[in-house]
Length: 398
Image 1: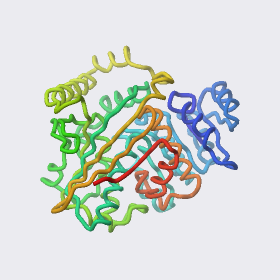
Image 2 (image 1 turned 120 degrees about the vertical axis):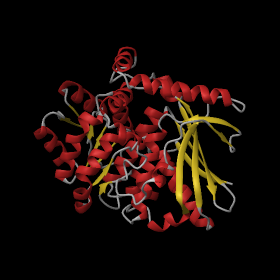
Image 3 (image 1 turned 120 degrees about the horizontal axis):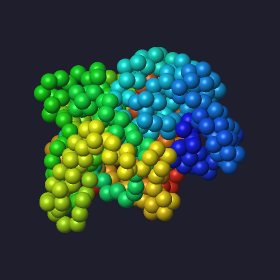
Image 4 (image 1 turned 180 degrees about the vertical axis):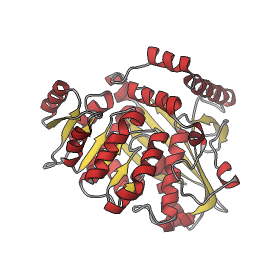
């Protein structure tokens, strides 16, 4: 069941499902506008369900009629909680493309234990936020074990080409408008049961300034989605450490140093780029500061894309993501994990990832329940699926 299918990301997810859904898989699109939902279903030859997030009975019927619910209906802070609640009540697997940390923490606190007991997989952040980051670290952990070394840290540098959709902008505004600032600043906000405390937590805080990337030979700026991805990766690691990440064996954590950290940056220019990296850092800081004010949020809503709007088909098609993750080894030779994703990162790549997560859940490939991360629940099977799409390459070098 694809909820939010009449929105921008949802419409592309429906088209993707129509293209790759295996024979015999029954699927449907869902939304609150009957005419739009029925027209979309007719176009793709699938089922149609009218459901309103504000109507608990319609959500209950939606969840009860499906094995898996995929949601693209955001902002998730306001629209997500009742959907997750209906899925847990019906023991229906769930995945979405959120990057909203406060929403993820809310559903961890409210639903993780029950979902774990009943074997229901609840997988937020099953898109560009934050599967590539998880895949990079999971691959690094596998490679470290194969080589018999320990990782001190890992750093991904992204190169992106793409656009912004209105749903993503609305989510960003919602995070800064309603999010708990203390929670947003905590690098362990999605791993509340971590044994690391005090100075150990502070030492793993978010990067705030450019660094020199030895792999690319240039200065790079903190990545604007890095804070989200770092927290999802940290949840995967902390669940694995205590044997609660069903698809990530705890033994893989033996290859991580006690203060292992994962960071994300973005390349900004050719050459060493020190000034450009600082300029990008300052620009991102100013943008976040502006969105933290009422005036800034009103301006973003006024001049940015509205929910349901997004980049042109040409931008989606020509988009590209390259992620180079340098894995720094204790007393050994560093190595690199390279990923390349075809299509606009926040739209095309996100939809491709979300659909593969949904198909894996529908095929019964999740190894356990709880509010997990996609890699925590699906592990190697998800990596195999992403590679098989032809639009997502993953390789180790060095």
